[in-house]
Amino acid sequence: MQDNEEHGGARSRELLTFTLGREEYGIDILKVQEIRGYDAVTTIANTPPFIKGVINLRGIIVPIVDMRIKFNLGNVEYNQFTVVIILNIAHRVVGIVVDGVSDVITLAPGQLKPTPEFSAGLDTEYILGLGTVDQRMIIVVDIEKLMTSRDMELVEMAAA
Image (cartoon, rainbow, N blue to C red):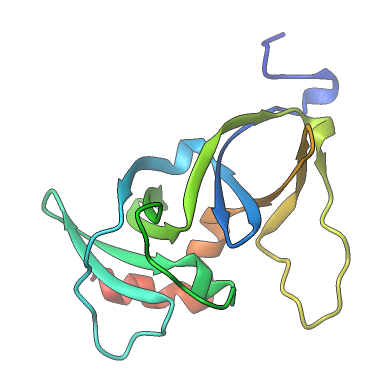
């Protein structure tokens, strides 16, 4: 049996953690291509507010999604800690803007709790669960499901 497996075949998850406002989120580290400082983007007309625009990354046009706007987290400020996480998802390269990157953690299956049931008005479809590490609560996001969802089809259009 490998180190990253436990009884029953459940696997540990390696996550890149980042902050949006006061919350900490985690995404699958295998989806992360690189982490960059926030630079100016070229805006695209008629895109939703959460699509900031595109950047040219070594010859690849990469759409940039501001996760703070996507998740309705209020004031969006760009400072020296603001970063872009470049993701490789469904054979596409997409960047997400976050407040800052924390670290890489490993969650054992027992550390990931199911997402609590909320009212119908709150969309938890993209949340895999809540991870607990020491005193930290990490919202684990299925970033591939989020980035390939219907409302993100505009990412496809922006990158086309």
